[in-house]
Length: 171
Length: 311
Figure 1 (cartoon, each protein chain N blue to C red):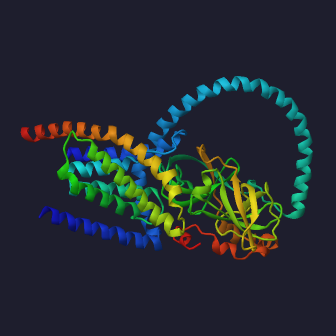
Figure 2 (cartoon, each protein chain N blue to C red):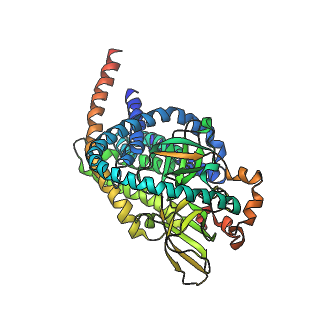
Figure 3 (tube, helix red, strand yellow):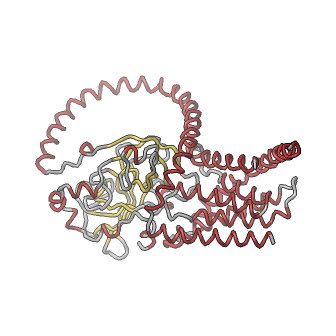
């Protein structure tokens, strides 16, 4: 219970940092997609059900920020949480390669989703341009952040688990 | 069993999303209570985090600025004396200009609009969309479709309002389309955002009549026939105007006056175009040359994402 609350608090903080601090840094040509890291990591670590829950929440935050059709981002993040949750049986704590691969695939899928439904549909077909200027920088910087954030999640997750189990034992 | 349950939840939520997308594409109003409630929770977090980030950034910047400021100071002192002389000359000119304005009934100064200042507290961190959020909302009198300016130029339009925040879509966003005109000749055109062109700091400008008199360097302002933008706000300067292959129209690019990378504060014009129209400036509009040259422009201008799909 406590873990879920902390994770949600992290999600809101990540959302605020992502939208309020990263755009202020002028030399950063791309900003990491923190919400995406959170959703796929939580899905991967905790499984399908939690993945969906966190994905749904992250999507809602995004949809409330943008003024386009409501549900566009919720849909994407919901599925991201679910699909990554399906892979959680391969989850093994000290194994970082798989999460990094997952991060790349998720970033690609997420940006392709936006590109296709928001740009390609309107006849903006120069995919190579969008790939080079938007997708690639974002994937790289998100990967870098995953490297640190994923380990950080694992670390505090262990702490919280230990705390939670102690708590229930006392009861 | 558990995985089956998950699939049902997934299917249910997916359908919910799709229904929401469908409904809100058609009508966006009824979600505003929800957005407002969430705004109450998120806004303090966002503006707090924003303040910390900005303070850090400004501190570093100020250091750098101080050094260059000392050098600049000397040069500027010299400039001041030159400017004083020039100023007296310009004052005379401006008196003349005021008289001429009256003559042409072209009172299109920004001064005629009511404005309120706001701070940008969040921006889209990804590079797909050019939207941002300001710290004023319906409680401060902000309403949807109000125009937003900064640095003396057009920044964007309010698309969404909560009690204490508002979302603004800037003119450089890929789906933004503004009906505009050349300040001197009054020829109409459409200024649209384009991610590809914005990499070079430009906007797209097209739908110019082939015999229209728009040259490189001409001032482009919001048009009087626009349905959502109040007239006479500077957008930028025309560049690379060329005749299209069809020979019917001309197009080119536009250098915006606003530096979209660094804006932190904006002004919101609290006069709505639809209300200005009602209050009887219709006569002035029909007499302007812009209204005659093109009547198709307002139909092409779009602000809703749905409309932009069929340009």
